[in-house]
Length: 157
Image 1 (cartoon, helix red, strand yellow):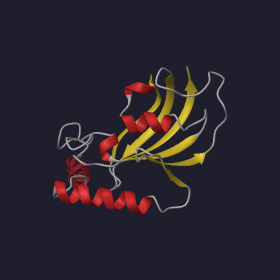
Image 2 (cartoon, rainbow, N blue to C red):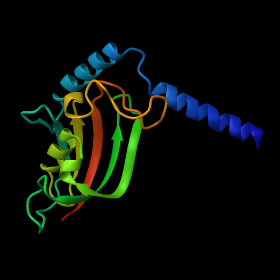
Image 3 (cartoon, one colour):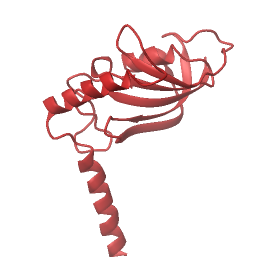
């Protein structure tokens, strides 16, 4: 039993330490380069604000009209950093479109109901130079982080 606990603790430590950038300025540069390269990939579109997105499944027009800040959405999503570390995930999450970081809200406005998209959100449309969450936790988002979300739009109210 003790061996299993040690192995589990080791896995958790490796996962947490592997998600922490060594140098914030270097991390900023890595994120900027990643976005430049991502923009060249097939199917990736870039908005005027700098949000990048890709339609995986187009979805259908929703009966409640176009997605805007005043609407409430029900979504499934997973959020990760450019190094692959998942910082958040939720199923059947319900929230106002305006409650998300600006890049996420803008991405939702591109979608149709039952669509699945990937959003590539630059740090200035997300948590900026401050980052978010408590350092050392799995939900920590380092400063200057590009956020990568896979989002499924289930309903619009």
